[in-house]
Image (tube, rainbow, N blue to C red; front, side, top):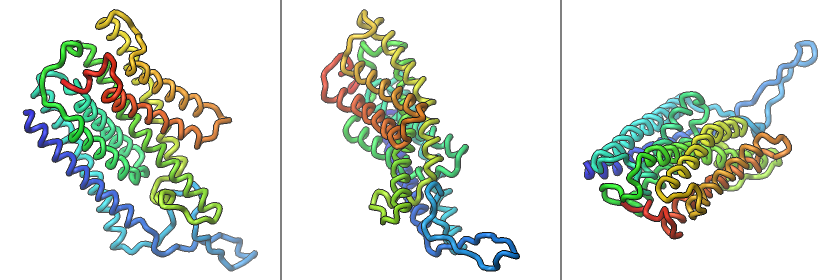
Length: 331
């Protein structure tokens, strides 16, 4: 089972890479070719002329208005469906990888950093597929979802891998199923929220450049293929408002587990401290989002900051900073 799990990880990476190619092809086929002039309706007695629209779309639109040949439209449709189907297939092999890992170790498969990253990315992919069924217009950010997933899985396989085996005594508790599963679920949803927030900032920068008549830079130019800023901002908020209560529960469950294991609820261990910092960062995001005077770009940057604290907690605290949770990186 352990060998099968490792093979399924490789298969999952290859499938997600294929999905990335599909999303990238879809982006390429969305590139404008011929701008269709828009017609302004005027009363028949006032005028008979029509006025063409400007070439640059107004901010908040989902992309430039183009007249694509039927063949290109067909390829665009097939590339999109291929990317989504590959993502779904990857989710199946991804889940099988995690399941066989658990069967090989005869325990829940999130007892170390390698397994935790597998669980987080699976939750992120499943959240993405669920979001896609409700909001098909967000499909262009699938490229970045696949990119983030491949990056994290590749890092897990090359840097964090640990052979399947029993848990260390300190982790052998039913609280592992409660605390770590909640943390992995919240982290996976936060990952999708981070991607949406980053896409929002890129799209907003592109729209502002177009509004000012400036040529967008390389990063800003990617915003042409992204959904409207309003859509991305709503998705960012929805993901965070869903994940935050789960993360809060994970922190509380961790404190209860700490009392059972070490005789105290909170000891300001580095991992506990950074979990609290992440909680404060995300609470700050939600508070800023509910405050009308705070500008939306600042709110989005707070979401990005929250994910940075999560990544620091996952990698730097586990691998560099010594603490009571240091064993989380091994079996």
